[in-house]
Length: 429
Picture 1 (cartoon, rainbow, N blue to C red):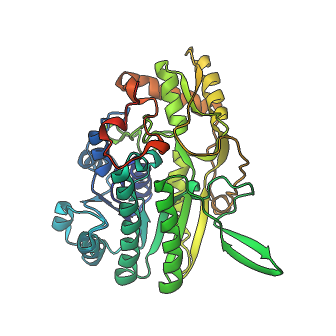
Picture 2 (spheres, rainbow, N blue to C red):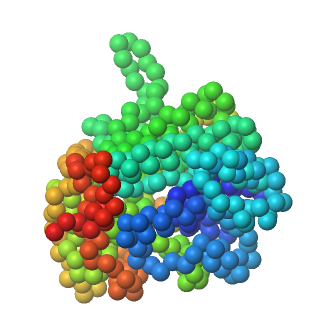
Picture 3 (tube, rainbow, N blue to C red):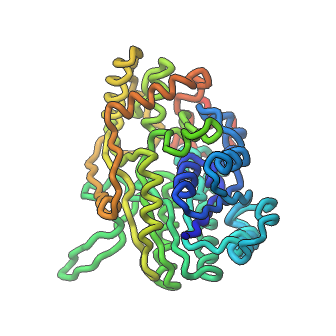
């Protein structure tokens, strides 16, 4: 049995991708341990945000899952930046009383080391990072937090593996945003270059467009170095934009429902458009709408993680998979939602709003994504039926939508040193 340690903080096993993946792995016989400090929920409280879906507490989630599935997920409330906790969790799997009471932060090495020592994982799935580009651009405080939490937490994870479980496979969630939008094809992690008569295969150039994306780039460089210096085995999953909310496990009971973010800070493009269509708000296309990215269904996210675990990298190998299944521009997404919304009797309009981000709005984009499919991924493509299903799901909860959260409030150009908690979620009129 693979012992899969969920090395997550901030928005870890309780987050959008993390919760769905934890259930997916548990249902398939993996022994799963979630480490999370529940900071993702704290972000909502601080900024005045809320998920569209009425999610229960992480304790109720885990308890319900055990009752209906007969499978146990270990829950450790803490943070992998705490080294003491992480090492203890790896070392003593039988210390369940400690596991249930631990509280800490992955930037705190003591906490992190205790957690790892208690569980001794075969694979460490690291989702534990602040994952929002807009959040990292709110103000200086959030930019510093994002860089510190993400980069330091990741370094702690690598040291935990080196010192405590050297044969453990690190599966790290990266982002396609690391690549930016170059005017050449995007390869999977590496590119072969011929220059002045010489040839070398090098890491693909990175061009982050936010402090969040830059933190992910730092992570990738640090992991690559650790695989060479310490012979760690690591898989870096550069994930595209995730959409959807339902997986086989999250619909098994109302208490297992996943979160659904639709605001301008944490909501992803397609998920936001679907909510806007359901509540009668014009779809907010940023700028010209030619921004093109890779997308994937959340059902494919959970499967990709399983594939990476089942097919581990070799010791000393830094392996990179581009984790997405299709490419769309923002305009194409708006067109799809408009068409499908009208089929359901919804009045859907589109409006172009000033782009709060600093990014190319019309550009070339062609990224490769064959490695995961070569290992067995069978993609759920964005068909009309998927949009219909998502729209029908969102309509059930549309009364929970706070209309003032829909428009983007975080402007890349206006990030300053003054703490901007009150202006991060609701756009100025």
